[in-house]
Image (spheres, rainbow, N blue to C red):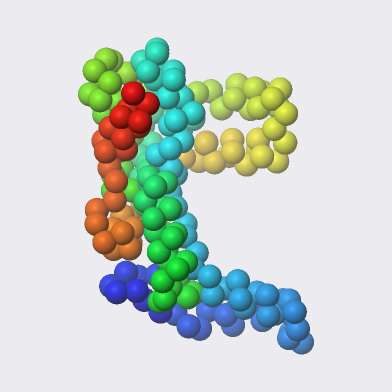
Length: 193
């Protein structure tokens, strides 16, 4: 089912693919059927991920990124995602929907540092984190092997291919343009003042 003109990619016939789990019916089948009716949101990487290095950005003028320096990323504001989540979980018309939620810009580290430089009024440069060194620090910090391997693989993939999506679904669901990185940085700066 579609909501307004937003394409949720679903339709009422998605449930058939999961019947193989429990061909006799019963509790497993009923559980899976109920779960399928809940809208799925697939957000791109969050703008808020930069908050983990915000202090380093402000104090040292360095934006350290695990995604490489040239990979384009369609970062999405978590506040936009939360707004959409509240809407699709409480309003009718979103059963079986799958929503890809991407931000409005394909941002490289260079473009992000230009925004940060402008907003903070001081030079900010990007540095690529060495993923192997990151893996070592995470092992020392006690992060599990599977988590480290999965995140490292994701970082390497994004550094090579980026993570770019189309913002139209998010804009349609929000009924306004998605938050830009400029707007996000201005909001963070205002809240941290």
